[in-house]
Length: 158
Image (cartoon, rainbow, N blue to C red; front, side):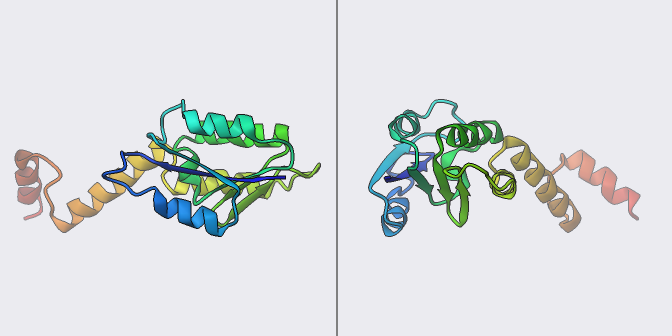
């Protein structure tokens, strides 16, 4: 049984350092690390596909966090389903999903997908975050609307 690592950054190496993830995965004792620079929302991730094809029953895939695997809840569910079918263990930071056993505890998969949605894995979460930030800015009086809308708003409050 081998332990594999997967590290991903969205932008090229001059803007983001993937080596931090590599160091953390090495500290976890992984045998081999697959690295790539690609957006997490892209459906095709060549290195992740290589990793998944290389793993065998009983192997472990480690990432530093859920968002390194994917930024799509749909893709995350697909990866979890594949891990279950092939009896692979997933470790995403502090979250662990052991699919090597016959009976899987239903909580870890939901924890992983829930954690993924909280961490901004899905685009829907990101747009919700922006809505909340905009509301906070509006309350503080920051300009998130057009100047005309802000003027109308300020005259109403007088």
